[in-house]
Length: 94
Image (cartoon, rainbow, N blue to C red; front, top):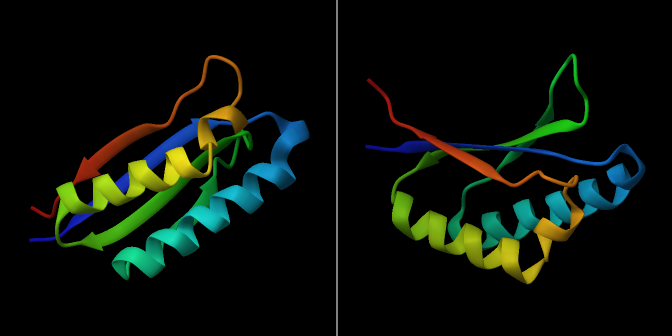
């Protein structure tokens, strides 16, 4: 069974370029470590809400460990809008 990770958060519009660079660096590091290539999206109606999507994850616990380690290494939380945090939703096929 494989899993899909959906991670969403709010950014400040003035930090958009920096957040994009760090988010893409995060996705490259995740791909290098796990072979899972992520996608970066934003809401259609509220473009400061971003989402990372990682699909086809065979080992959710191992992937989560790598993801959390890279998020800390890149100091991702410092780039989020005040009062925002990375919210993770984990889905599996029916």
